[in-house]
Length: 215
Figure (tube, one colour):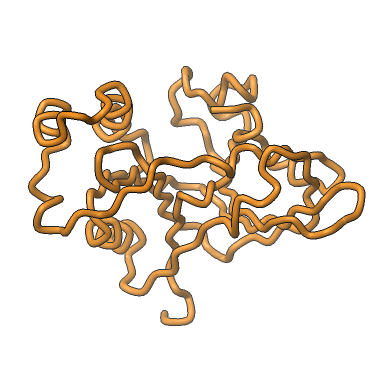
């Protein structure tokens, strides 16, 4: 994880320069398996490599380490193997039936210096973040943490002010339950509870929130 992908809330200051490399993350294209098939695949390295013998073992093990790790305090998490499982988990975690899915607009401006122009906070304190995981089929690591805020951030070209992109960003405002060896603390040079940790959502990731208009 790069230094540009983890930052503190103060970095949203319009005078600050932002580097657009992190939203350019990509994985090889893979499709969701039908629910009936995906739900029968155990999330362990032995069974997955048996079913998909050409799969890269190291990357699968990295994904499974997230899926099988214990949840931190205030976190609920899941590794859905189908779209149906992702939606079902999100509904359960958010406590509602009608949801909205959000992501960054595009990869435009990646690997260039950009500047924050406008920041809009979504009117919600309950978010499910789903990060695409590497398995031989489409899968995600989804989790919901307490004290989390979601933002839409307009980025512009620094010299001309021309609009470049609108990215989604999430800020975890309470990091006190996080383990001391979390990568965010190494990048931010903080300890648990000393400050918030924010990160961009690349276009391959999704954020789910409740549809307030339907409530």
